[in-house]
Length: 115
Image (cartoon, rainbow, N blue to C red; front, side, top):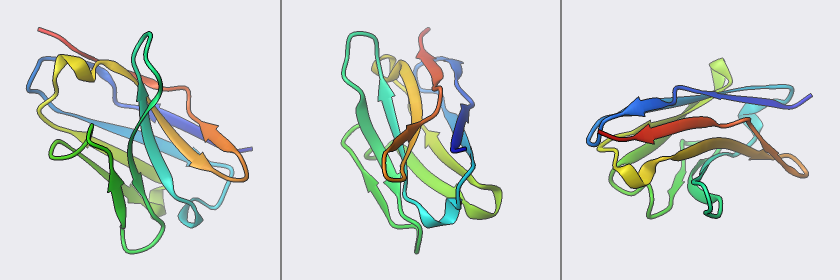
């Protein structure tokens, strides 16, 4: 069974940093693109970043550019999202995603940016 479990969220001050993790199981992790999304209350789920299976090819939305970096460790079946210079508007639930015939999502991890 495909399972994605996010962790690493929490409360952080503006300008702070967090590294989110997504532990994957139930599929051959190294064969699939991994993605991060976020969703704030009352907002649509928004794409943040994706990382391919080879050569660490990455794609970022404007949300991420200059502040967030996606990476993966295939030996650990884990994808990461490093977030720097966090702003209050980054407050959201952050989700890990992969597509294996259909979309699979983790339960999400809450990030709150507040002073």
